[in-house]
Image 1 (tube, rainbow, N blue to C red):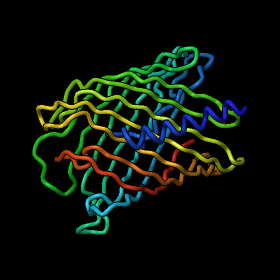
Image 2: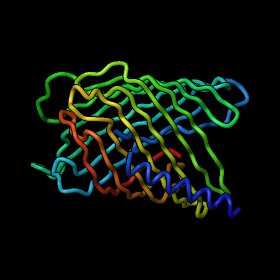
Image 3: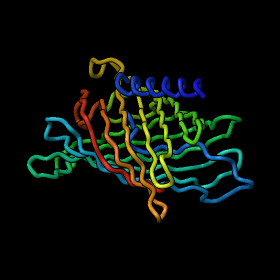
Image 4: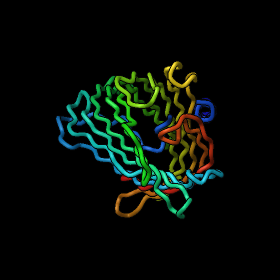
Length: 270
């Protein structure tokens, strides 16, 4: 087991480095690879998420980050799955009100997958649109991305490591200068007892841009979290977490990068 433990430490180090040096979707729980059923199944999986994170920084426009949504498999056809992910993100400041919902962002992502011997290959269509709350906005801020994702779960003792590697091409965009993206996500969980788990997760993303539009190069963003998972009697799970984030273009109508600490709570269905 010493070799596995050493390998696990290396993975965590790589994850943290990725997240600190590499626009990221880590706060939206991503589907992980699922074992194949014996036969075709309809609505075979459903995952719900609801989260709120306090953003630790000195900018009054960025005080809270919240997400509400879920993902589900419409049909599992044994050789793969057809699924949909939906998320609504509300960003809140604290000026002029204590809780000022100054932006709301929507994500919709249908996908199809094929199971391989040790992984799952996913083709997805990612749509994201961004909106200002209680503020004037002219024109759409949105983009569509066509991409592929590789999912793998590694069991290490009683714990698991989930790996998600993806890349995509922006096929349509309004206002933004994005052209392509590449992303690596790593999540490890280890049980403490029947009620509590600990987890670490990191996500790093490269976003290619049209340098002629805003005179900037490839953008680097990412997030890293550590926390505890509490399993409820009804089947839901609460995650308490803290971490750091480097976010690209946090304000919908402007370009730039911000960094902050964060602490929050997340409810998920498993």
